Amino acid sequence: MPATAYSKTFAQELDLQQLLARLREVALTQVDPKGEVSEAERAWIRRDVICTCCSVDGALVVRAGRNKTGRLVRQGHFRFRSLTGEDAHHRLCEFYGNETGQPTGAEKVRFSSTAGSALTRAVGELVSRGIEREVFTSEQMQAMRRWYFEAKVASRFKVVARPEIFTWLATQARQPSARSADGPPDDLDAFDPAFGDLPTFKWRRAAVDEVTRRDQPVVQRLDGISEASVKTAAKLAAKLDGQDEFDRGALRAEYAAALDLAKFIAIHADLHEPKVPAHRFASVGAPSALLALSALLLFRTGYDRRAARRLFVELQSGPSAQDPRRGNIIGLNPFHDFDAWRAIKLASDLTAETGWSFNRFDDINLAEARLKAAHRTWRAAGRP
Image 1: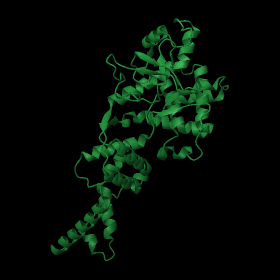
Image 2 (image 1 turned 30 degrees about the vertical axis):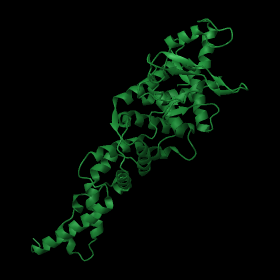
Image 3 (image 1 turned 180 degrees about the horizontal axis):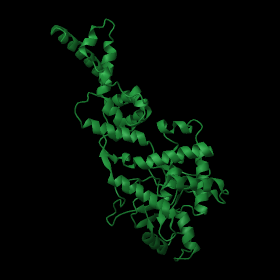
Image 4 (image 1 turned 135 degrees about the vertical axis):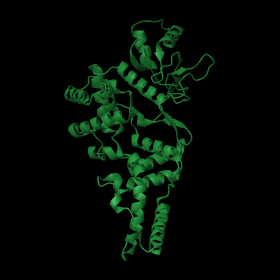
């Protein structure tokens, strides 16, 4: 039951009270003398209003609820039902099966002039500026949501949540070759049975090198995913095991652009959370409100990075918004926990593959025993 919906006539996302005020302001329908939602208004809303996510039409009005003292206990909202009374939202819509009236999903960001976070308040004020100056419009915001919804529909995978896979991936993410330019042990370090004749030969270190070299393809597939992101992935996957989810990796190029713009804003406009400076964005991600603003600016400019930077400068250097409440909207951060979701996809892919034990400690023990056996065989053959 969405609290807001998109009006095709007014080209804007509005809640029920805002929509009724606009509707009565221009006198498009007959108004109920008691101030209730008239049948004419309900009919107009069914024809005009669509879901902000999946664009289903046929909205029904659910008026606000009050208790015996007149106190508001339920905000007026919209409901989308099929002719048979079933939920009409697409099953991948954020409102499908949702009776709360609020969008679900951590990718939603409530910009607000009264938000608890100073960063979110600042971003909300910038969004207000953008709306007032028509730098971006409600139509463009709606188009961005539609783009994201269509991306979710187009790229899906089934979540597999075996805890040992995430533990193994976290270990792989800690390997020096995953964090530095030195890379894994090269072929020169590959074991030769003759090495075992050294009295001080480090069998354990040689076994570690063998396993690290063997696992390097997985480290390459991690492609910068941090240990922290893998741990977040494990928690998310435990709740979603067996479900179909959006493969965020399909938006890899867009994420790189958004992260780059977020870093530019954080560095040059001092917009960031105190505990998450710009140099940490690559490992822990940028603040959600900042990514939401970056995504909006990039979508507005067709993902032209330079144009998006210039657009931000235009917003930041201009006058403050006359009405900061214009930015009190639900923003979209398509990249929330982006690397964690990439880790979930990788873990799900690895589950379907063969040849991985998902236990680095056991692998090293087996490798050490195998190297020692190779040395004994070599000596027994006369050290050829």
